[in-house]
Length: 168
Image 1: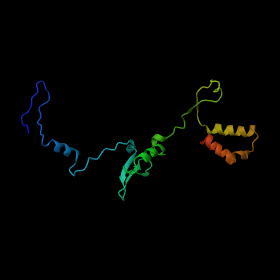
Image 2 (image 1 turned 135 degrees about the vertical axis):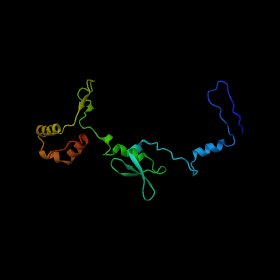
Image 3 (image 1 turned 180 degrees about the vertical axis):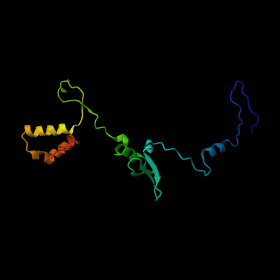
Image 4 (image 1 turned 120 degrees about the horizontal axis):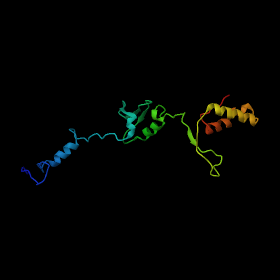
């Protein structure tokens, strides 16, 4: 073991002692704790800002949603965080998933699109305008009022405009 410090001309760092016998022991003792186990790794997934990790009475790792309080399995080796990521996107109480109904959607009208004359515009859902359009369709096409109660029309409206409440 060298106890004599080595000076290098022009060096600004202070000289250090090199302990060749104990250098390996120090490095390994820093990575292991007092019990000889590895350090706990920090949670790397962004889902943990939306979930709280808990351990239930059986000792299984669970994740509890901070918004709707649902519990999900989240064992590192068995489950992972895929289901948690999916839940964040579909959680009804998650404030980032709230849809602003007052904001319009960008649409490209059908008129003139084939000739390249189309222009972008915005569209907003309006229950009253849809109701008036339905009433005009019934009057113009001389349809029975019972037409809006048919299963086929209801299925069509669910696909075409799911937010429209059909008046009976």
